[in-house]
Image 1: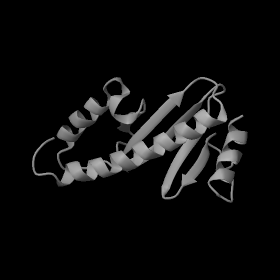
Image 2: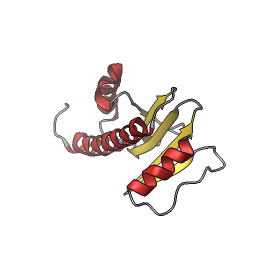
Image 3: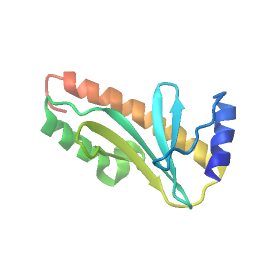
Length: 133
């Protein structure tokens, strides 16, 4: 199911090579500059991507700001902002453990990419801001 949805999405977006399942059991899907790891949950999917390197400036204030965004999934469309295991990168993760049709899959990937871009820009703004948000 996921493989078929990926093929159709690649066709619509005019992406020549359809992602292949890798050794870590996910499909590395590139949309423009963004790289998303898509995992088949059978049923459902999980999406994950790196937002950016975890800033060192105002780190505690940034984490408080991001926790507010995570509250009830409000700031990231149901996705969660977190850290990778090495605490080097901020990540965006979304798990949807249920069957979905192609249209829902497409909208989910689109929304996920939009939130990824938004939070990348937002973290840069936060780092460069003089005062705390």
